[in-house]
Image (cartoon, rainbow, N blue to C red; front, side):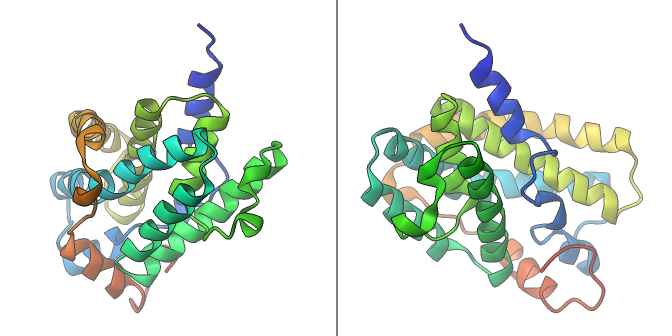
Length: 223
């Protein structure tokens, strides 16, 4: 079997992917400010909670549908699920993150020759999850591996943010990533089982933290 799809997945998950993921904390900075996250254990709980209760039932489930839609060149399904994602964002900050990272990945794909990533002709709102699905289809990454990659890259981004916000070292970051692995594995399987009418997250703490971050006095991360 060709190693190219696996190499492409590593590229999509790499912190070196130029989409600006490093500039967002996804509410974590406000959670630190509020005292909810204050050490390695609470940071690990936050990161695993975001994966399981926010990313999995929304982005991961929709990613599978977008993967199928791009594979079938079903533009209407791509538009419908991308707009559903946009409507599901719980704060302006979370929407901005998805938009800006989506635009960056779209530019990367267009430069690689993937003309479907030119979102204006398709009347698509910008979305990182949508472009991640398109990249997976273009590079022959199957849906399960794409979901695994999305969850892993999200966990790595959150760990990176935690290390910049808290007095934690790189070894603590590796421990947090390792604790997230069983959650990521479980969520990859769960995303396959979520029905259309079950898609959606309910994470009021994350929504509040993200909204508070928009007006936080001192910020390391974009809002």
